[in-house]
Length: 343
Ligand SMILES: NC(=O)C1=CN([C@@H]2O[C@H](COP(=O)(O)OP(=O)(O)OC[C@H]3O[C@@H](n4cnc5c(N)ncnc54)[C@H](OP(=O)(O)O)[C@@H]3O)[C@@H](O)[C@H]2O)C=CC1
Ligand SMILES: CC(=O)N[C@@H](CCC(=O)OP(=O)(O)O)C(=O)O
Image: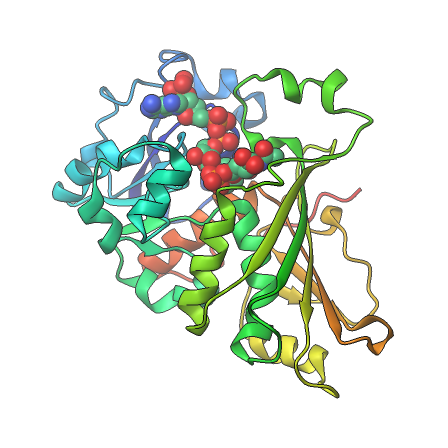
């Protein structure tokens, strides 16, 4: 049994961590923080957890995080970078669900996140927590940068094509849609039902901070420069990401289905669907799965990959638990045997 702390237990990814960790056989939740709800019972705040947890939220300062074996930061960007060094020094392992340690290029990070990095030394030491690429490094990591939700869906979808060198890496397109929980629980007018319900829109078309994260992932994995047009959209649903990915094939006559099946054959959380199967977010809702489909419509030389995840699970908390399992040498799927909530 290890002791874990969760910083940010009232947010959407913190809630999802709680849902997964209360039933995790190897974990004791020792502390859950919220500055605004300190003193409130965790199960009073999250009624779905009644009978599962007997703790109250504390402030981060009073949480005794240095006594934990592992601390998850489910906090806004720019939070963990101020706290991680002291925890690591105290022997605590850290998984940050935000973007503080995701990009190795600090200049790019500072431009996109609009702040000066408080712990540049730790950026180098951090391991990007995408198990399908970095499993070995995650196993020995003290600090894991949990990937972004869009980058998880897009990277897993494009990786087999780029690793095999069969598409033009300079002209990739990711047309991606997210449910509103991707924006977090903090109130904003744009996320009111009357603003985003019965409507569908693209946003950040001119540039989104996940584009450099995806490019860095793919460049790191395959060693070639990546050109990617990434356009996110907001869909009036709560959970889920669907990524439609387009790439120009440089070879003909490929068995794309076999390529994808071979790449992910041993991956517990990537499911390559049979050709022609429906690819829908509800098939992964509440699970840690990424489901993929690959096609070359009309044999026209353009490959279309569809990738679906639950942004709060494989896109955040589930992937963080998967990383924890790897870091502590447990079966990677511990606590993650989840059925999809469909319909
Ligand atoms: N939502 C998603 O689908 C995904 C989110 N992420 C990332 O995960 C992180 C958390 O996201 P999400 O759960 O949606 O965010 P929320 O806005 O829903 O929750 C944020 C949580 O952090 C706490 N918090 C805020 N500021 C601080 C601070 N300075 N110090 C300590 N605690 C703080 C809040 O509680 P309080 O203010 O009371 O302390 C709250 O519990 C973000 O970085 C996000 O970008 C990553 C992948 C997917
Ligand atoms: C729908 C929506 O608003 N999505 C968020 C994704 C946020 C997120 O998860 O950001 P990180 O992964 O970088 O922490 C956005 O586009 O800003």
